[in-house]
Length: 337
Ligand SMILES: NC(=O)c1ccc[n+]([C@@H]2O[C@H](COP(=O)([O-])OP(=O)(O)OC[C@H]3O[C@@H](n4cnc5c(N)ncnc54)[C@H](OP(=O)(O)O)[C@@H]3O)[C@@H](O)[C@H]2O)c1
Image 1 (tube, rainbow, N blue to C red):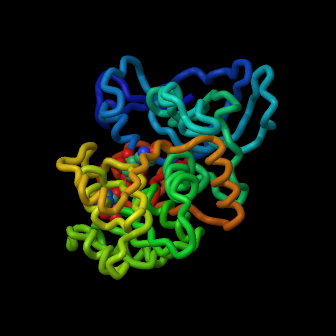
Image 2 (cartoon, helix red, strand yellow):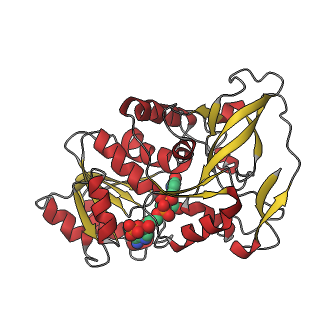
């Protein structure tokens, strides 16, 4: 089978196509023919060696995808051959709170990922995906979708009338926008591009702020909310945004700490403003299988369609990752097999 691996170093110059044997399912496992994958900012971090600088053998990258079950191993009886499934991002996190051990079971680093024609996974690490979604749309759910669902619904408990801020117009942000709208919230989107802000408003956002032309976007959030601040902020920028997120927060509001798009540490964390806002800072790490299944129920009920920017054929996986690295997209980049 064809697969892509990172080997003998890091960076896109070490991302190569290869041929590997088709794996066989063992007890409790299934063989999946992949139909589509989608890319996340994390995939570039994996390829660049940020997440696992010790990588010692070829790694198949990419965590998110959808495929069809074509063989089942002994004792695997949860799914039928022909069913369409998505692997969960953190393979061993099925329900309840995660444990430290769960973090070594994430797909596409340290576990082998999905950028291969066939993969074998435990049936317990899979979910059925909503029938009405295309393969490409379904492939966007496991990391970006579940993270946004976890932040907005499971942990954030966003409710009708709340004001939610989402940062940028990438995968997590647009899912967070869509889920917050399902809850009846008002959503403010920040972006470096006015054209992308217009598209976010078409998607349901109530207000857009260009964080490049208005670097004090926190002041704009305060002005928009008549001085109160936002009930919930999904912080995706990290280094350059967390202090502004604190500044833009309502007293008693919550910040979901999710991303590191502008850096993985914050210089001079604004502790006093955080205290004055009684800020709840809640980190999010994707989510469990139960969360994924609850999200799928909501997606099916509301017929919510993920936002896909560009779809590449399998042969152009490098071009897809190059677009991801440039950051020039709205929503998700996907690869069709
Ligand atoms: N903790 C978790 O469980 C978890 C899960 C998934 C992702 N993440 C992290 O969350 C972040 C977003 O992931 P993603 O896959 O959605 O990324 P993505 O799709 O690659 O999002 C890229 C977009 O983010 C926006 N952006 C970049 N720098 C920004 C900044 N300083 N302020 C505001 N927006 C900025 C840009 O939007 P515009 O072009 O509109 O400006 C850019 O197009 C990443 O850091 C990722 O590693 C964490």
